[in-house]
Amino acid sequence: MEGLIVKILSDKCYVKTNKEVVVCNLRGKFRIQKLLPLVGDKVLINEKEKVIEKVLPRRNEIRRPPVSNITQGLIIASVKNPNLDTNLIDKILVELEYNRIKPIICFTKLDLLNKEELNTCMEVINYYQKLYRVYLNTEIDKIKKIFKNEVTVFIGQTGAGKSTLLNKLDANLSLKTGEISMALGRGKHTTRHVEIIEMLDGMLLDTPGFSALEFPNMMQEEIRDAFIEFKDYPCPYRDCMHIKENDCNVKKAVLDGNIPEFRYQNYLDLVKTGNTSEYQRR
Ligand code: ZN
Image (cartoon, rainbow, N blue to C red; front, side, top):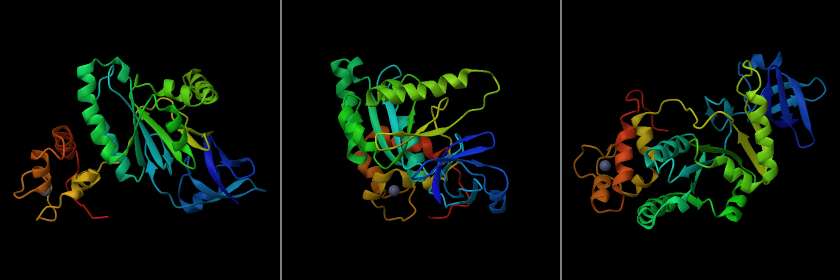
């Protein structure tokens, strides 16, 4: 029978099937496959023996927290206290793109801006809106609809308003996640614990203690390809990195104002952090 691992605690795996949650033993069988099960894995289980028979192929895998098969990432981006940080937003966007996780952005705390700040901020927000689904945290009814049939992770800095948003989306849920966080605070030997919980017809990855996800290092070319609008400006040189090359249409788009300076600057900053060897086009 097929199921989804919603929680792993010491040597027990909690597998949700379409009927119930089956607590499976982690020992034994899966070692044959040499694959450690992760929260988020789709698995085949033997209900009688309560063991995992097989871990099904993963869509993606995050190193920290250790989870798999996330389908969308809701980036909670504060515009004030902490201030709007497009560098961080772009970094997260690149990582989500690379890992085939659909990015959605929710901007928070716009009410803290004065009129001038708001104008500047809206220019940034409008640009992201051209690329991705974007919401303001006041659009609760719209946000409520994005979770259906998805496995979502919330990503945001401390103070960006994650728990406030969760609370508005589903008061029961915030209670639930609150309980988990409190349970974690008890005793210093408690390991970090990740759980998938049901939310608004979908699943939510609850990751107390993680404000960012950790992905493996990316290649420079992969970072370039994750700036999804660049492909709208094809360059004569096919492997153009849009940095020093001549006749670069991405650089031209920046000069023409079609790609904003901040976005290109973030690209230059991020691409420096990428690896430079063994690149293979995917
Ligand atoms: Zn170029």
